[in-house]
Length: 282
Image (tube, rainbow, N blue to C red):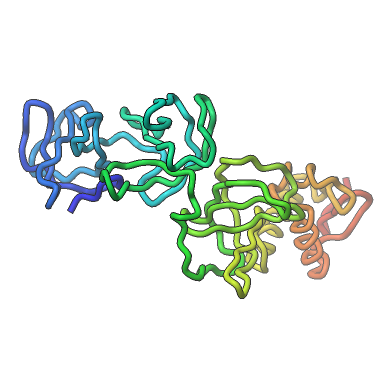
């Protein structure tokens, strides 16, 4: 059965003058226009297609990549506003995505980027966007491990830090004290779960935590030392910005990794940097 607003793998059953007709199950035959198909496409083949409604509200299939599908969240740009029904967003497809006035927290303006949920409207069966993202979040208790990698979409600034949607499902918090560099509303990035609190709130970090990440970072540091004649001019007195530029981690994570190497007697502190033990002097 084809799912509207999502990627589907559908069988082509018939050729038409306009393209291939795909088996959409209860939705009937769904047209995949010729311009979206390989030149040698024929009935009997399966195609991975995105199914949505065209400008005349007909179900159609495309191989174009939308920026998000139903059930996901994205930061999209407003490309036009209809004073009767709402704003239209660019989501990567030929038909722009409607953001109805009733789903706006504040009137959207052309050129503005807004964080929205993608959903199917129960009344019209059309795919729409909503700025009321909290309604679409999973309210069940998150089941994440400490240090687990996750995808993040930054949604708003708070007194404690930045709220972020985690894996298109839950809401988490990036604390100010854990940010070595600025983030922006609407930014997507990779992060890590610091911990899930007893009340289900998710604390996030842009640096992995735990022994697994420290072990990975120590390997990076050793490799960098070996590539620089056994010495790096980066250490405890280096700025957080310099450490992030070189290793892509916070100063705290770097110090943890260097501390682990020091305890293993693999490095020693020298001047403003670190030296690989038993490496030749420069």
